[in-house]
Image (tube, rainbow, N blue to C red):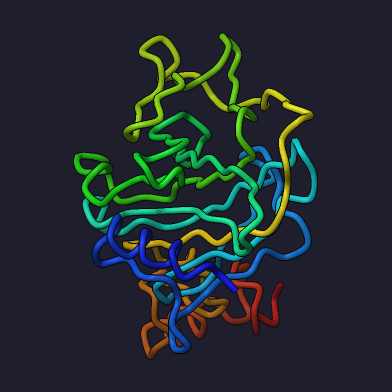
Length: 229
């Protein structure tokens, strides 16, 4: 179980972000999330995601998740180990292409990584990549490390790295892996397109049927149920 003290610290730091309740939607890592944008694990679904549970399998493991942020000013994230024994964690937020947005290693006396509510204000609603790594395993791009080592606040990337894309991570073989929980606010799962939503409005209705019937028995691109395809 998560230590009681850690629960209190996260609740105080995030305010509206609490550790997952029984009714909350918690996403659990499937096998091993990848460390790069093309290998990130997609958190799929239409519901609000209040937490991610995962594991860093070794000293230089990194887990990257693809999430949806609909209201950027409401986004917040805090990570902590799910047992009293560390790992010492870091959090990183990238845009959908892997360009650095925000990061944090240790927030104040809590020594837990935190990206507080409001830090993403001014950024567009979009898909983002949320990464967690052991301490001193830092993201790098073509021109070097993407973020400065700032522990007391959520930091933006280096000015000369803001257009640089994540291509790898530094490795600290003395770091410790282990289980973790990321408490979240303002995060939704990636919406999975409906197979029969031919007009791409998010619903399957009579309008989709009309489009399907119009394309039926013709050289349509609507493969589902199209006799001509």
